[in-house]
Length: 308
Image (cartoon, rainbow, N blue to C red; front, side, top):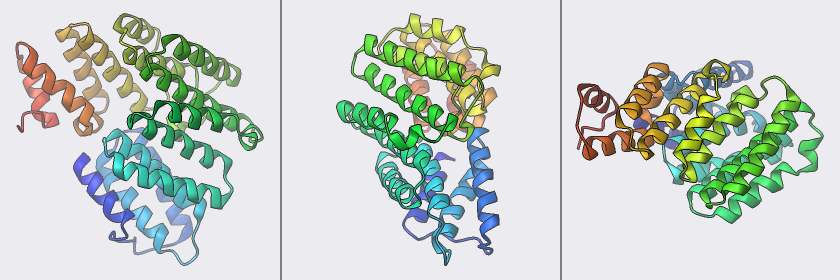
């Protein structure tokens, strides 16, 4: 499913996709809402049809809606990052940035900066990733948007915290995470659900990932145990919790606990787990590093880790 998604997004971005028969503007807006819902619920089979068609349709429209097309490209960027397609991710993120600027949408401008920061981090450009995220968080335009702007500032600070973890700076990571937690606490309820949500539980979830990245599985698991999965706003975020727990157990050499967490992630969001290269790589490593159980072999077969 991941390969199908990438191929269809690539074709849509290259102008080779097929627009919907109806290019009614209200219909395209509704399709974008449905695409975000598919992402939140990890409905990749539906998303593989809906999002590429939406991008092709929005490009084919006689009167371009820069804001709508830009939000479509932002969603495409998040998917391409998740599926480890960095080259297409850069292309989508840059288009999203230009469209957001043309639309004069400060939230979309800031979110495109966040996605560019993620891509820069994955490229090994840690200083640039930090600068992108923190500069966007301090944007005066973002501060004028109200509570949604505050939530997006929190997401940007979280991104910077994760980059600090990648740089091997646990103190900086925890300081930035505390700043994001203070912003989330001040908001009270979940904001920006279409961007993964921002609330105290999602900040704590980022802390799990960050502690894994600085190489401290004990702290990662302690942070994870403080999260009620039901408090996370989307299926996609809950699946991330279980996979992060699996990575922490794997770092600590706890094979059985790692496999149990992967199976929990699969029960939560099977299409997500079956599509992600990072999960496939983890399972492939388990196959090579120790005894193989029927649970592990079955999971490996379902995610395609046995193809080699």
